Image (cartoon, rainbow, N blue to C red):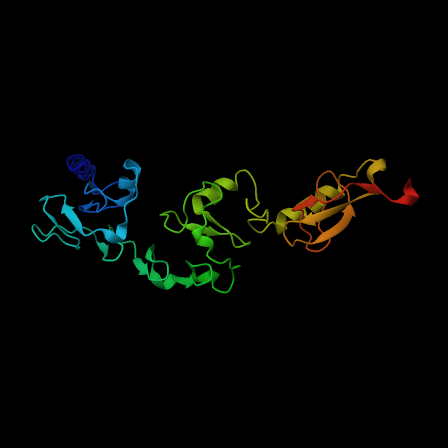
Length: 261
């Protein structure tokens, strides 16, 4: 495995980069679980039937002189810089991306640090513009992404906070918007739909229902405000009387006023 990992590193250097597809680094990690050498924990986990505990890494191997040594930022033998950024807790080596180690998250995050704050209830670092402006859900980052079912807390992909407070990987969120607009967990609108709702108002007004449906009403439940209301049935959508959202679901059968029967 060591030879294979070194060969991968050599190929990467010829291609103008070091390390692997995940990280730019000048060393291999010696996995404490199996004593094999891998460029990073992700490479290890993709090839083994167990996971590498990043916090237990004690030794690394320089990709240039191949000396195995204790984990540090610079090779003690040939002075190769293993990473512009190095965290002695996570044993993360990489290019400088303004990373910082968050003690509350327990891992490193891409910064700069001053642009983020740690929400104690959500248990996650969030952008400063969300401070006091997001819905908190306790330990929400410890849940898997509902789209891809992969881990969010330790993922290298940025998390996107929905208005309802649930989290998705940013890439999963962007893919979701190609198919729909609702949170896959609670069905709340995943973005501000106000402009579209007003366009739908115009479409409803310009599309009168046949006479036999004009006095038909239906009970609905709003996915955005959780309110219940009774509204006129329309094939294009039924607007919540409370928050004016069309993100609603029928909560009962249709009925016609007695004086119209």
